[in-house]
Amino acid sequence: MLNRVGLFALVCCAFGSFLLPSCTHKDDTEAIQRLVRKGAKLAEEHDVGGLMQMTSEEFSALPGDRDRDEVRSILWMAFRHYRQFRIHYPEPGIDLSAGSDAATARIYFLIVRKDRSYPDLDELYKDPQGWVEAVGENADLYRLTLDWAKEKGDWVATQAHLEPFKGYGFGERH
Image 1 (cartoon, rainbow, N blue to C red):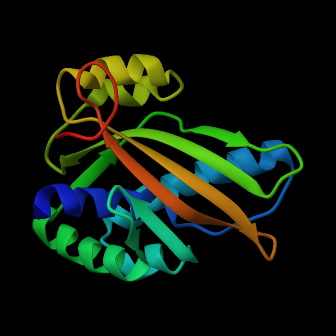
Image 2 (tube, one colour):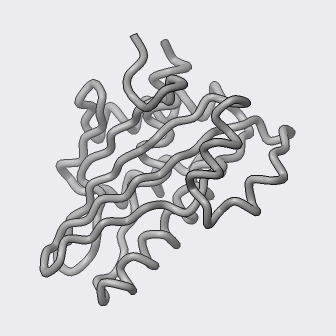
């Protein structure tokens, strides 16, 4: 149970819990993409506090409708369980609502032990479909969907939804 729940909490916060300043549509997209990279780095460094400080007060994670306190505890346990790891992912898809203070990010990713290598994935960063195809048969692949909102001019993650890849598409494992 720790394995699945820990992974869930890890990725929800690793990618989704960052404040970023409000900018133009293009700047917002680029800023979210930069902060996804920062989030992966914070997760790899096991920085639970740094990740959680940047979520909204109402942040929740699905499945399971976990609140901030539950996610914080699960992250702490997950980091202890996984030890040293790296997160691999292609360029995130970002949808910004025109004239709105809302955005959604979709991130396909995998977590591997630090000593494991997938050298070709860096070359596929700008090709998410090729990236998913290259990874899908060789590792456990996940999709993280993050909802964002502007609070006082800053983007904050408000909700995360984690789905495992099941060979034919994404959805919860039964």
